[in-house]
Amino acid sequence: FQDGLTGSAWGDWALYTASPLRAFENELGVQEPVGFWDPLNLSSGGDVTSFKRRRSVELKHGRISMLATMGYITPEITGKFPGYLSNSMNLKFADVPTGLAAISKVPAL
Image 1: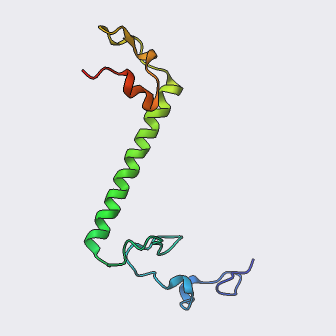
Image 2: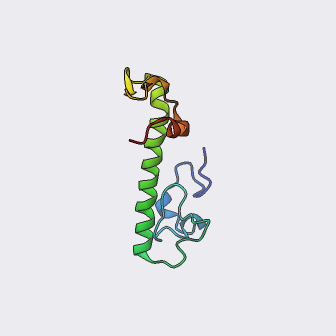
Image 3: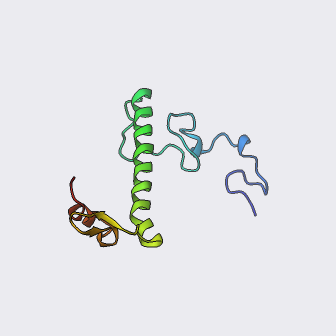
């Protein structure tokens, strides 16, 4: 097939320097394959410190979200622990629902 950017069957991307896709390739926050993408204009100040902080916070939130998703799915797939969560309230692990409904069922102490 023909490469649409270089016009040859096996075009060399390094030789095609006039591409509009290369407009922000040296900017902070550029990633393949999207390039520079900031729809909310959060990095308009160009401050490297705040950009790195936002990036680390985004990674942290993503990891917490992944763990929360696994915490929601895992009991449904593998089952729940046998036995009692609270002997005094006669509450078994199997009686506790998954998700946000569990907050009201689990004793505070």
